[in-house]
Image (tube, rainbow, N blue to C red; front, side, top):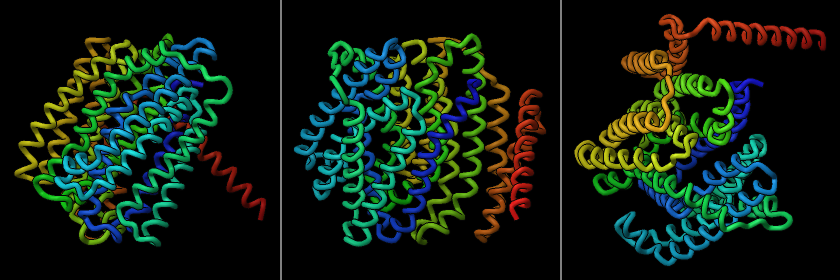
Length: 494
């Protein structure tokens, strides 16, 4: 099987869980916007920000270290030693962080919200961390084994458990914001127990030397991840200070839609981060690496175009009137994510060349850019300032990531084709938004037309190579033949 077919097959499998999470998020939107005010929604976002920072700061990206050293291990015994050592370390880190955080929750609440009123919520966030960290290391083990189907299945089961418990506690018991926190805690506990039971069977293979190597590899990534979290979510903190929780709630909804583009990245990286070490060893590995970025960018900018155009009608259909204003911010966030993801792809060069410390340089530059942009734009322009600051930050980080990647190893990327993708996506989106119908049906029609115009514009400008056009014709012909067969079988069955 070719590199690209493997990439598509496993990425598609991981995408099932990602799509399920997005579907669940949209399924819950009418519920949340009915039971939560915009201020409540903002509080939830800030609690999620706190949990993410805690996860990366204490968790030290142990799953990334597991992926790297699992790929380097040559025997099953060595692989088990890496997995067991990383998982047991995650339990120690998770428990330590939960105890310290639980005791420090009043101060954490004051830092995040300016009051200790949310101490109880912060305690729930810290308790959840104790089980989330081992769960994520367990998922890292499954990804290292390339068990994409099992990973997706477990992710969906965890999601369904969280949704059911959330709805019950929110709708029937009227527990408010706490319902979301308790549902996260319950699903994390169940997932953690499953990972422990299935992975730690038999004799334990704990090795302090492995722990040291994993932590040393992961530490720069952890620092980088904390910085990335500030870059992604620090704008909520500034908005809380300058505009209040309601503004955070509206902006968070817009960000949720814009981040849909980032969810193209999630299944892609779930496969790519674990397998890039094997791909690059292929005799034609450099060409595969370069071409993958082109196809990846094609999906990202196509996704940003669709999300930008579809946001307004979907928000009107799924939420209450208080939330409608969020739609105007979505295109800025969506294309910011389309720009950001190639920057993260360049970071893959750091892993290939065993230079994870370069992540710190990129993240430090990103934090400097983002804090400057937030402090300059948000006090004056509020949510618009936050959205534009995000775009500026991601563009700057992508440039720094590329610069640092060339210091590690030079790849000759397809710059002309990448530019065609970006210009086509941005131009079509801009033209479509200039003509904004007043009805939901008209807005959906414009969204579909814009999506169809994207590949047409690329074809007209000569983006596709002859071999790619031949491949597309082959698969289109195969699909037509399969459709005819199904139709004939249906007729025969009658």
